[in-house]
Length: 287
Ligand code: NDP
Image 1 (tube, rainbow, N blue to C red):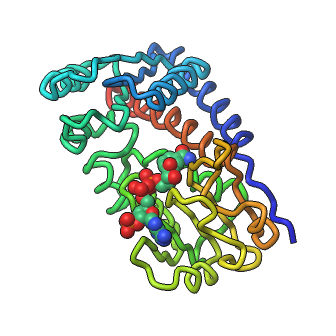
Image 2: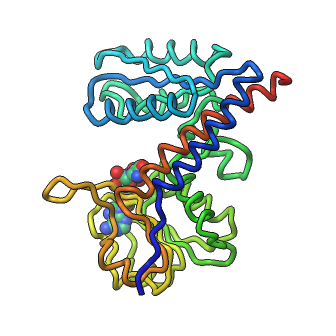
């Protein structure tokens, strides 16, 4: 059996087209959806990520402003700037690129973002809203994974989903989103005993670990859906996921590739969240 590929690039393209369409409608009503991206320091990967975020936004008609600050920016200055953006009605969405320099408390900075502008979905209000099933911004990576499951018509009710990884930005929100769709969810982590015994029972496996080839073919139930969140590098410097793609694709029913799977979906969901921040703000103002 060879798994069907879940094409993240193609799905992200569809999502971007929908965002562009809805953005045009909002602009016609006099609202220009706007995202403020804050980058502190000159981490090369962060520079690439923020450039992608700006370009993706511009391509879909969203307004994006990148604010760059030196690595030694005092935390208090950053908090003051976030407060100004929070109060600015023309800014609908705020994203602080992580990681922040060591002298800053990332948790405190993320908490300073107003929940109705927290398009990364990382602040405690957003996490709490997800936990209790209230509207709020969902973290882009697990949100993108859910869209992929939806796109292939994966009915989650009653299915066993195993999430490997329990970070606040991927594993935990992923598990909560699967649970909200009535899957039975197992969360695995570095202290899990006999991971293979658990993954072999799973109808859906989400690998969000950061270890190359940690999910091998013998760990997967035939026909399962495998979502690979991992972003690692081979010895040759090539991007790869957590899943042994060549082996697992012979067992799984569906599989996401790396690159071209979860990565583009994560980028697309930031656009969705930004647009929705503007749509909500417009409806609150009676547009
Ligand atoms: P973290 O390092 O925060 O979390 C990794 C998780 O994996 C932890 O919960 C850890 O357990 C668990 N883990 C580590 N080793 C094992 C093991 N041997 N068996 C089972 N679980 C294990 O990473 P993130 O959640 O931030 O990211 C995970 C991966 O996803 C990374 O490769 C990252 O680059 C990628 N990523 C990709 C994105 C995309 O857009 N495609 C976006 C975000 C992340 P414990 O908690 O016990 O330490």
